[in-house]
Structure formats: C-alpha cells, structure tokens
Length: 126
Image (cartoon, rainbow, N blue to C red; front, top):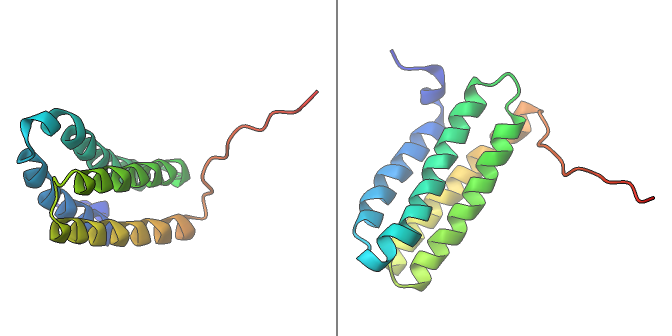
C-alpha cells in the first residue's frame, strides 16, 4: 500500500530527480566522486528526507524550512559541477529545471501549511 505522502507531486518529482542525479554523479572522475559528487548526492537525499519528515509531522514548517536549505545548497553544488565541466550544459539545464520545479512545489507547500519557518534567535542589546 502506497502512503499518502508518496502520492504528492513533490515526492514523485524528487524521486525522478534522484533517479537522474545518482547515476550521473557515480560517473564523475574519481577526484570529484568522493567530494563534490558525495555532497551533491547528500543534499538531494537530505532534501527528500526533510520532505518525509514534513509529511509526517504535526507542524511541517521546520522541516519544510530545512528542505529549502537543502535545496539551496543543492543548487550551489550543481553550479559547481557545471563550472568544473562535470555536467554538460544540457545536463545542467535539465537538472536546474527539475530543481526549479521542486522549489516551486516546496514553496506552495510552505504557503499552504501556514506553519511559519523558524526565525533566527533575537538577542537584546544591553
């Protein structure tokens, strides 16, 4: 039986993105496989994990915020992969398009949840 969160478009698109990304990073040259490839993979997997946490939580805001952080870091790593010619222009375009779509879905979920993301601690000046 498939769980409700797996039916959501963001989960489906996240899995499709992982299906695209993981075989690609596995082909990176050895000098980048255990650094940049690993960090890129970890961000994508952590993004998915935060989505699962959000789907199962009473208040999703904190997990959606963390997912947004992971997605921002993932964008950075994809740009680094492209700038080091580990991704072709076409691969980078395809990956970026998927990440943009994930960002839109995440933003929609954040708005619909009504659960505000955590804010930095405020300190009072004495």
